[in-house]
Amino acid sequence: MTPKKSSTNHQEELFRAKLENIIDMSHELVKAAKMLDWEALESHFGATYCPNKGSPAINTRLMLGLQMLRCLHDISDEEVLGVWLQNPYWQYF
Image (cartoon, rainbow, N blue to C red):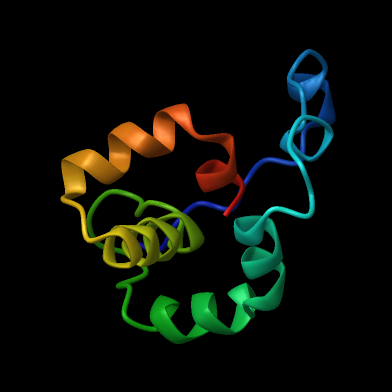
């Protein structure tokens, strides 16, 4: 099934700090994230989803970003998730 669209309910985010306000926007991963055409990647890989079978998929940008970081740092799936949880730059990417 295709990924669910992210919610735009701003009330839910009232007490959540935005990463843009916390991290250094000149960091290399922030620059890399801005250079990538995420919409084109989502439409390219989104074509492989079956729209009406199975549970909703994880966000395409999240999956692609984690895969890129995993390959870039040559680490396992478990390690990339552990670092992602603790590193706001990886989360922004």
